[in-house]
Image 1 (cartoon, helix red, strand yellow):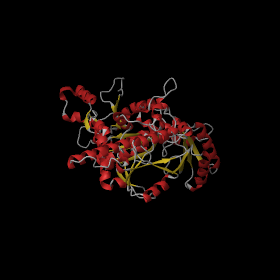
Image 2 (image 1 turned 120 degrees about the vertical axis):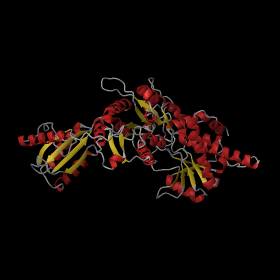
Image 3 (image 1 turned 90 degrees about the horizontal axis):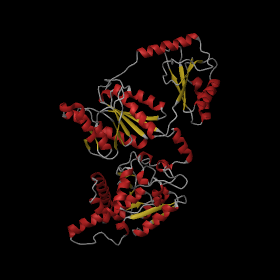
Image 4 (image 1 turned 135 degrees about the vertical axis):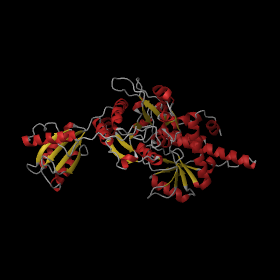
Amino acid sequence: MEVLQAVEACDDSRLRARCLKAIHVVSRALDLYGTRGVAFSFNGGKDSTVLLHIIRAALALRQRQHEASAGLPNGFCDDLPLGGVLTFFFHYDTDFPEVLEFTHATNKSYGLAMEILTGDFKQGLEQLLQQTHVQAIILGTRRGDPNAAEQETFCPSSAGWPPFMRVNPILEWSYHDVWGFLQLAAVPYCCLYDQGYTSLGSVSNTEPNSALKLEDGSYAPAHMLPDARLERAGRQSRVERSDSVKGVRRTAALLIIGDEILSAKVEDVNTRFLCAELRAIGWRVCKVVVVGDDVAAICREVRALSAEHDIVITAGGLGPTLDDVTMAALAEALDQQLALHPQLESRIRAFFGANTTRAHLKMAEAPTGSEVHLIEYRMEGGAVSPFPLLLCRNIYVLPGIPALLQKKWRAVEEHLRSEAPQLAPFRTALLRLRLSDETQVAAALERVAAGAGGDVQLGSYPVSNQVDGAGVVLSLESRSSEVLAAACERLKELLPEESIISEHQDCAAINTPVASPPAAGLAAGADDADAAAELCAAAAAGGTAGADGRA
């Protein structure tokens, strides 16, 4: 009852609403499946600790409602462990001793009569379901967890798993929501979280989070993590962490927004620009999605992309008109309200003065909550722009007009460089070949790829009507100049004799030879060099700036 009272008395309306919604989800699961039909998976971590007390609060609320309607106390079987909900825990030899100690202490403190299971999780779960009446399992899954992107609050188990309903009461909670609740409820949690651990796995793959390391070598507690995107940083192995610093695990997704793109009224030049700029600072763009001016569609894509990638960049859908719906979609995706942002409103009013209209103020709307931040950027001349960028969780919000996007991108770039370890940029080598059949290079590409061990990306692209007569262009890409050079030399050895027209470094253009001179040691003829220069000049003259008329 004390947890329920703490939630109801919470001054933070956003956190209170999330807690009450989670309590309602648990209560609804009990309505649908009965207490004997619901189980709770406890693993000693912060998320399952939150769920334990959300369940307790739901049971307290149901008992209160029963007493109010029936006028009788003890309507919900106080003598049953956790109101009759089965609690189970999978024990592994690689568990932290502190997790086991906390789990057993929790079991004893709250009289959970916890089932301790061992062995394979899937097999153990199947046996549990066969031996009980359980039809639904309450889980601590949150949207940022692996494999959580497609899940819903009530979500059937995946194909190949025993049939049961997954119940995810805190699916849309953020890292800071979790700690906000634990501090609000004033309940115990595993001591490792006070030693710098922010996400607990096994002893073999979990370390304190380096983002919490203090000058004296100790670690701040988990609730002080400033950037929720780093929650799982300590869950990587040493090898993975080394790769992450090099940028291997830094992934980005782009969400291009606008009916005008899908209807071919304007050309999308933002995707190419952002892909090139991100790769130049070491970020791998893994997905690009184009979506129309539809709140539900934008919301759905934002949630999925944000959960699957380190950052998301949106372009388009900002402005004063009815089709500018990006902010409304972001608010829905973050489970927040859309409201006037005090600082944005103040700046809008200061900029437009007495001419400020309701349409102007629409551009001051933003999602509420602590995950929304303003990023300043400077205009030409160095003055701070009156219109800052918005960062919502891990989502950078950019305008759709290419000229504005390109100016504001510089602020995003600076922010990424300041927030993440310095990443090595991608280096590229292109080989232009006088071949017309890609099958002539297939075997060579496979051999080089096998030898590179994933450190080099290779591609083959057929082209036509090239001034230099090229029919195939080969691309090699890596963050390591040494690895790239070695792979390029190996590939040249395996190509058909005299098939190479020219070689170019750090150029992404497939259909146009680069303006830079051929790589050192390459014997390109004068005619080839002239052809390359001619194509580059033609490309520059015919370049498309593009404009989509959107902010």
